[in-house]
Image (tube, rainbow, N blue to C red):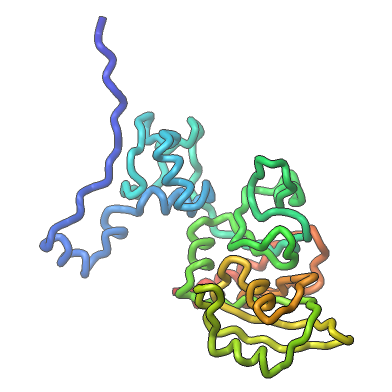
Length: 270
């Protein structure tokens, strides 16, 4: 009997030397040789780059029937690529959606403990979309979602400094002067937070609404900053992300951002 040959494994090309690097200045590698498979698959909405790396490690991605071994493999298109044996279509133009995330659900695709996720709220016939950033389980409001993993990554990059605005209902004692100190940044339990703009909206006794705008969006940043001042946060709503606002979108509803508005906004990203 003829011995069966092991499947071919696709590896990334070696890093070009100095001579090749000089050529790159005139013609970028992506233009000459294609783009990394992880980037192409992310753009096609398969998953985030990090998740695609895990899928490659797990042997779930193939090219013309052979295993892909490294996420930096350069390709000009997705012809011949399969994920779990299923062909991957070329990416269509990115789409962006506004979703009013309700309180009490996780920003996750699934939760093995059985907790409710945003995908339990979204329409069942919705095309595959990914959240841009996260909102805590008990935070509600605007959650942007997209079909394009590369656009998702752009939106989340700290260097782009996209402002996010929240309204927080709090209980306790705070002054506008204290809140204005946040514009210089603050360190809490060894964690540094960048400039934050905060304003008292209205107060009834020791209850008040505070509007907060920040650009970093670190884990539970708004809650940690307000709790640092001794405030109890009873409700937290994200009202905007960049130029996109929650407006009068009802809880649990989702709608598409106009393509023109998306294209214009993407021109401002780095």
